[in-house]
Length: 160
Length: 334
Image (cartoon, rainbow over all chains, first blue to last red; front, top):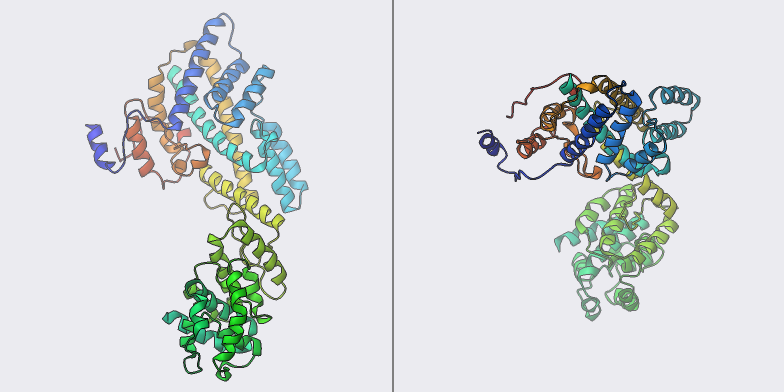
């Protein structure tokens, strides 16, 4: 029934039930990585409270594993493997530095450069990329972050 | 060929402005050259003052040359033999140089009558040129630009480089906007420098601007923002807020983890409803981003909803409303 209705509306477009959009692919991958990892965490450490950082670590790892077609995921994996502490979020510290640096720069190009370098810090591996590449990667990083947020929300809501 | 008639006439009106004349002449010659062989001209044409315009038509601009050379008005047009002679003399040269000369030389036609060479370069955009030439010299510059641009479309790299050099030389009196083509087919705009470094720089900058535009579509609420700095600010804020959200959610997840009992399909179903709001905007703007289409279709209704989503939500402003609980909120399209 629904399919019929929708077919009417989209008869101009080919509909293939087996076709997966990248977003969907990502979300599936992400949840398939994260959920088992969380379950494992849950089971392994049920006697002791689960470490927040560990969860974050798993979250980031799932993100990186689900988006391996992008450059930043490799960098993110590197970061994760090199340290136990997740380093992807740099919110407070970067905010402070940004404000300071922004006020010191009067040259517009300098400002833009500052912001670009700020952006680089946010993106895993952004420091090693040139500007064009970085901007592209930021785009798909944002997309993946959004999808990750949604997935995490669903997981959280599902378990509460 | 009526168009060429006008061209010829208008060109001749610009007698006082030699560069303009030359350009005009070139254009008409260009137009003719590309379409007409030298032979008819040489073999004899209706060279006569009365048939001036027709001559222009029939004889690839060669009739123009004498004027430029002598600097006399076209009413004083010498007998047919003279242009013949000149043209013939220049004929072989012109013929051989058909493709070799840059458009820049076209511009310098006032100095020499070798203008015709460049004309041959490509399909003559005669009509455009005609309109442009009717204007003042400034417009002529533009005509030059267009003329420069259009033949280049079919020309090879060597020609482009040649034009590059020529146009550089020409820069003094004319506009500098002789379009330069590099391998990525960038077109220089009016008033922009044309050396190779600045060209590469311009290509790079345009790529970056392109990416910025795409990012603008991706980040909610940035449609009205103009300016790189502000845009970058917004992007930074957005990325930071997303990261903070992820952190917060993972923290929450850590606290509720013990109760993990998750059904992936259910999650995806929820994702579908939520993601619609989140990613409504960038459905079609993400091609460079490996074709993300901004939807997280449900398991059973995935493809249909996805395509619906794409078509229906392309123009929706992204509102990030997914950050507020939106479960079960279906779009009216369903």
